[in-house]
Amino acid sequence: MKIITNDMIIKINEMYSEGKSIKKIAIILDISPYTVKKHIKNLKEETTITKTIYDKSLPKFDTKVFRVKDWGELCILDEREIEEMRNLWEEIEF
Image 1: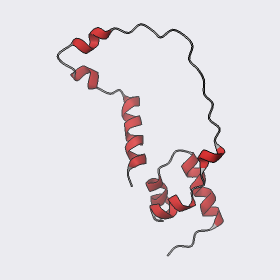
Image 2: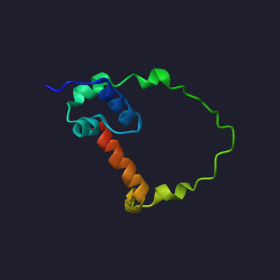
Image 3: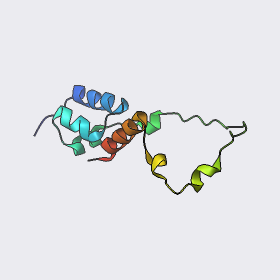
């Protein structure tokens, strides 16, 4: 059993606030994901959410794109979208 120091708890929270997943933090620090989750401070309480009302006109959208028979081209992701999907899967994986 590994002893969790205050420095490790600070490091866990820093890594988590940087966007690293619980699983990734656990691997890096060689501790269990449960231990990581246990020591993550509730950042939601510290975070202030600002809501902005969008009051501009929406841009025109061509609905013909949905009338094509071959949807294959619509399903191709660019590099940014692929990276977002990787990050999402990494975050939800335990």
